[in-house]
Length: 362
Image (cartoon, rainbow, N blue to C red; front, side):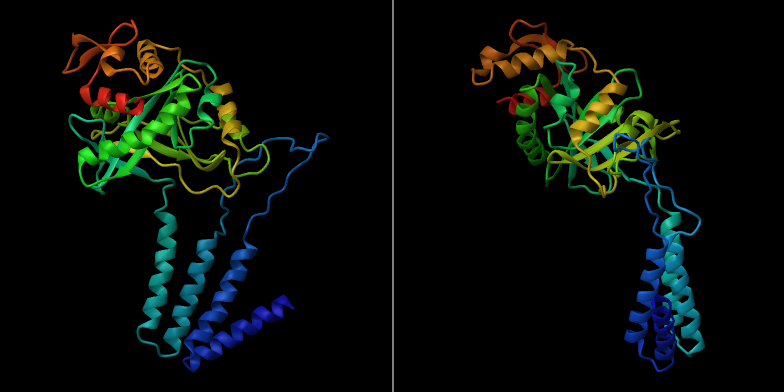
């Protein structure tokens, strides 16, 4: 019955082309294209063990030689020939052009896209290269605890992990749109406050990076890697088995909305500042806590340092007058200032950094 229906749709579509009933033809050929697309969909097969789970972690699905975009492009090319044979003038070029666009869209696909940025002087902001109203503040998470999963599982904002060294570095990219740098800084502080309070309750603290330092840490070349987090069963195992240098997770509540993994590539002559994205939305969304626990088994959390101690002191003195919370210990290197808190040794911070920290822990 299904084969007869498809043959009938093909016949009706071709007949309607000859009498210039284009809407009917488009419906018929659209139905045929959808049928071919459905037939090429890969099916998932799980091998169950006695415990009721899969015997091994599912692997990322790879496209076969018969890809869906080629099916759609083929239908467009067939329509182009049929329209030419029917005496069409513009329609053959329209269908052929659409088919070429579909093929090229697959060839030009490079995985998750990155955002090009430029540092804004004397600030904690990076500005979008193609979007002048986009501002990004790169915030580093300083841990006073080894329980990274517990601290990050309730943050609720996009996080980026650099695991290229033995210790993991966790960053929170704060994106805002604003007409000026000052309005952008105010919006960043407004967004950073709830995140800082959530993390400080679990012995983790936020440190907005100066724009030059942020640009230096984002001055890399990355290549997207497959990550099998879209599978329902044990998908987080891929975090421990997949080789990557950078992992980006974008949560939605307690679930991961999207994720992407990258490896570093050798730097070229021209260094650009690139903020990697979290890629497409996952069809199946694993728990953020589960993924962080798997990552915690793979990498180690860096121990607390002087900046962690300073941020802990600023957080602990919330509600006190600012003069009682901070101690000015003079000027530091390269335009920075030495600031202490609660008897802790002074740390070097720029004035925009200190202003953002005080706003976050006000």
